[in-house]
Length: 357
Image (cartoon, rainbow, N blue to C red; front, top):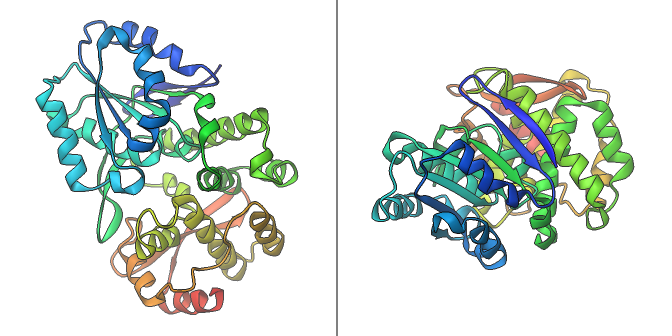
């Protein structure tokens, strides 16, 4: 079991990574919440079917209440958010209760936002079940979606702990593995050339990754996330670098329809475009052809979806949380491990997108 210490301005907490991490939850609850009587587990339909019994069995002492959301981004709507709050009120949760998020990134975003708003904020614990959630479960960003943009309604609310049981990842479909591993690639590109080169040399097939390779990748990614979050909890500066690939990626997700194009696969396309801009604008020394061919072999789509309307994409990017006024800000790379934030003109972006398509 690996323990990673997360340090933010508002809270210090640990991420426990390894097979069997679920078994460490009861002693943690007893030591950190000695007067705990109510637990609300927020999960989704897919995770409930595959894994809920495992979690509930270790929480026998508390007889947890379970709220089951739709799977994927459909969990992050106003209606589902309201229903989860209602479940908490109906089951008499109070300010000493704990919410446990049990699922992927979407469930974590929903559960964390419920925890941040229920009685003005109660404790919650992240129990990720996807590779993608190694990124989203750490750092305290919680949110739901609005039809006009992803994660537009949210808060910063740090978990009290993260229990990352790697045995739960065995049931992930190939598409979800790809989605999550894109964030691993992102962490390497923005922070660590050696880590990127290790991935490039050692990971040639996502389906044949060893448990050791996956564990090493996730632990390294969490440590990269911590390095930014610890310095900039509320994204007033360098934490924005973690959005590398996300400006275009979020626009692709929204235009294609939430849940129809996975987050990580959209972000991977966004990273390729950001690397292309970095080469053109900042003279980044990077073999983009090699990167594109590598990620394509890993199963990623590396070009814009055919039916994407580029004017609508530009409009979406203007609504991105990193944008200010009418300017569109992109995270680019001066070199691998050295990101910068740049304002890109609409005309340059549109020309670049047409060339990319």
